[in-house]
Amino acid sequence: MKTTSDIKGKKVLLVGSTGILGKTHAKILADLGCDLVIADRPESNVSEFAKELDVQGLTMDVLSENSVSEGVASAVNSLGGLDGVVFNAAVTGESLVKFDNPFPDFDDYPLDLWNRVIDVNLTGAFLVARETGPALRKDGGGSLIMVSSIYGVVAPDHRIYEGQPFSSFPGYSASKAGIIGLSKWLATLWAMDDVRVNNVSPGGVYNNHSKEFDDAYSNRTPMGRMARPDDITGAIVYLLSDASKYFTGQNMVVDGGLSCW
Image: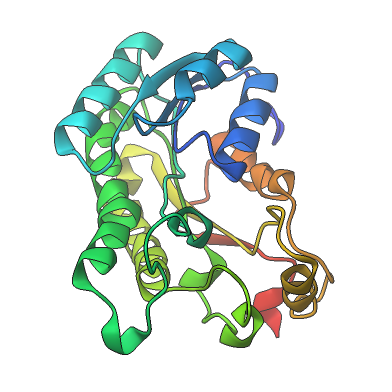
């Protein structure tokens, strides 16, 4: 019987592989022996990162239906099928800082900014699921994992963002809640094909935040700290492994207990 960490040889596509969580997921999955393809947006360093890990890399723009379709087809062809897919692409608060006025008041929130977040975080998830589903079903089943967020489960405490260069924003919570709903819908659709569809919802992950923000967030968490990237990957490994073969339609919340309070 395979153990939780026994994912050696699993054919896995990881979409969204060059951010703080994606890099950690990719490194650990490669170390554990997955037959791995990592994908990320064209302007990322996914090709160089893939060479560093000695895995296959490809560019995929989840805003483009053609790019997703072609990228998935390339991954399936390279791997000879799919055992697992991880959708980890997202617009986050930190990634918006580079834009002009990325966190406007809700009363003045522009539709184009809302649409961009929904298009990447939710429509991108839909496209990846639609394109990878046939390959997952073809060879006796597999695992589709959507990375949501604690803010798809509970609302943020807006007070902890006061004085910070970034903030929570409406499209993020809406899209991450939507991913959970999409995953549950797919789980019931594909269950008889032995395709498991689940969510992993991380709490706040430390990413060189200011001490003020780190303290404020940590004080909202029973474990008294923000997550480290490798705190989240264990859930991904479990869901890719055969140890989770009767586990579908669920949302694994990895938040240090924040949602208990």
